[in-house]
Every structure is written in structure tokens, then in C-alpha cells.
Amino acid sequence: MFKAKQIYIKRLVIYMEYSPKKMTEELNKENFNFKKKFGQNFIVDKNIIHSIISKSNIDKDTLVIEIGPGAGSLTTELNKVSGHVLAYEIDKTLKPVLEKHNLNNTTIIYEDFLKRNVEDDLKKYNYKKTYVVANLPYYITTPIIIKLIEDKLNIDKIVVMVQKEVGDRFKAKPNTKEYNSLSIFLNYYYTVEKLLDVSKNVFIPKPNVDSIVIAFTKKENKVKVDNEQIFFKLVRDSFKQKRKTLKNNLKGYNLEKVEEVLKSHNLDLTVRAEALPIEIFAEIANNLNK
Image (spheres, rainbow, N blue to C red):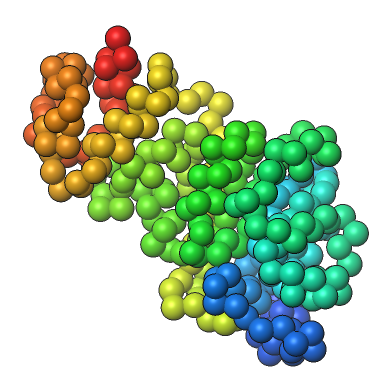
């Protein structure tokens, strides 16, 4: 009983330490104003932060990239457990807020991550693993994820908090309404899984929707694709009009080659893209590349 009470008190203290009131007071001291154009929603529940850290499996051999540190609540904890934190913050008015933390193990670059040459930044560091851990601004979540992949940054794991609806699309499986071309694009590079749900009540200002934390773990053995350009174009075109069949969406393709693969899986051209797993798309793309 006594131990349980201690744990409860400890959790209460942690929550109070990051209460909305306290964070608001700290931000007001620096005359900080939330900017809607940057999609700023700062997390104030340290229990959620500790859960993210724990599930990310960060250690001193890990370089962590954080995008949008905001008021520094997640950054502070990443600073303690990682080899180093490389953070990108677009809002320069947050500099005095972040400088109040003891971030002796963190480098903050006050620039737009989407416009930054991150590959050059990473050349300064030499760690066994590179992770991205961040509470991403809702309005640019997908562009950030795509940049991480297309810039070929050799990221081992991505752990990000995103809008629940967006996260559902990221981790969607075939034959679900959320499954789309982006689901396949991400699944090609990473194993995608949900780590935890996050209530909208743990942010200031409070957003209109709940969030989830998603983990993307780099695949050691990707599905075999002979030509990625053909593969990704095929996937995009297949979902061009989601409610239409492959026969309608792929009119400019060699449908005989498409159907050849489908028949081997007891399917035909009347199937919709949402019914096909990544492996079948890969087979079709490889057959079109012959």
C-alpha cells in the first residue's frame, strides 16, 4: 500500500511539474505567443514524455533528431538519455525559452527543417544509431516523414506523435478505409506500429483532435522491387480514384501483365487497390519492368 502511494505521489509531482498553468507562466515570462502558422501545441504531461522515451529504446549510442522542440519538454528528457540531440526549431522566438533548460547535450538549429540540408548536418556526428523522436506539427507531418525518407538519411527508427487520423493512415493495412498509397510507401521502408494513444488534453493550447505515437522501424529486408520508380508510380496510379478498380485506374498500363500477377493470387482486374498488400504491388511492378 505504501509503495503504491509513493508511486501515485511521484506521478502527481511529475504531472504538476509540467502542468498547463506552469508552462503558460514560463512562456508568458518570455512574452511568447503561440503561432497558429507553425501548428504549435506543446505537450505538458511528463508521464507521456517518459513513455515515449521508454518505448523508443534510446541509449548513449543514439543520435536523436527532434523536429519542433517547442518549449523543450521532450527535448529535456531526450537530452538526458541520448548520445546527442540535434533539434530543429523554425520559431526563433522560442530561443530564450529553450535556453532556460540545461541542454548541455543538445544542438538546436533555428531553421525550417524542410528546407535544411540535414545530410550535411549529420556529417558532424558519429553514432551507431540515428533516431527521429518528435511531436510533429500536424500541418506538415507527412512532408517531414517523406523528407526523412527521400533524403536517404539512413534513419534507423522514427518515433513521432501525430494527429490520430494521420497516424491511422500511416499504419493502415489492406482492406481498411485508411489504407492508401502513402501506407504502402511507408511500409516499403519501415515496419509501422502504434505505441500509444495521447489525449488532446495534455497539450497547450489544446488541439481539436487526439494524437497517437507511431514508430517506424527500418526494415532490414525490404520487399523485392526491381525498379522503385515503376513501383511507386504504379502504387500512386492504382489509388488515383480509390473507389475504382485497377482496370479503370491503370488504363495506360500493360493490363495483360497486371492481370497475369493478379490471377496467380486468384484475383482479377476488377479488384480495388485497397485490397492489395505491398507484396502484390511489388510483383506487378516487377512484371511490368520485364
